[in-house]
Image 1 (tube, helix red, strand yellow):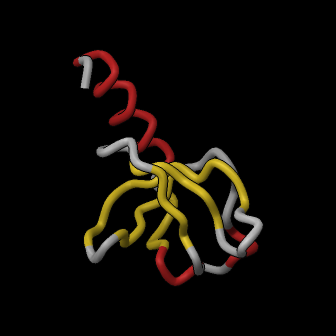
Image 2 (image 1 turned 45 degrees about the horizontal axis):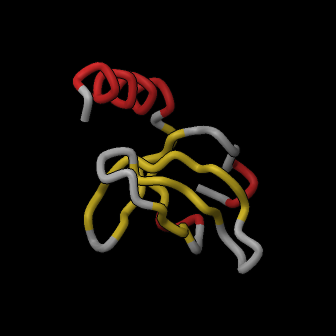
Length: 73
């Protein structure tokens, strides 16, 4: 993916700490890259480059996040 393809508020598969996960992009970082949140751990992450993202998974990410809220996770 390229940096121009990233949209705030969308969900992306990304490699974080060596593991693939789903990240919701929340804002652009003033230090470059993007600020996001790992939807499984609810931790904030910083995606430094477009190479860390593997693709847009917005429909799946929204569904997982909704299911986790319903389960109280």
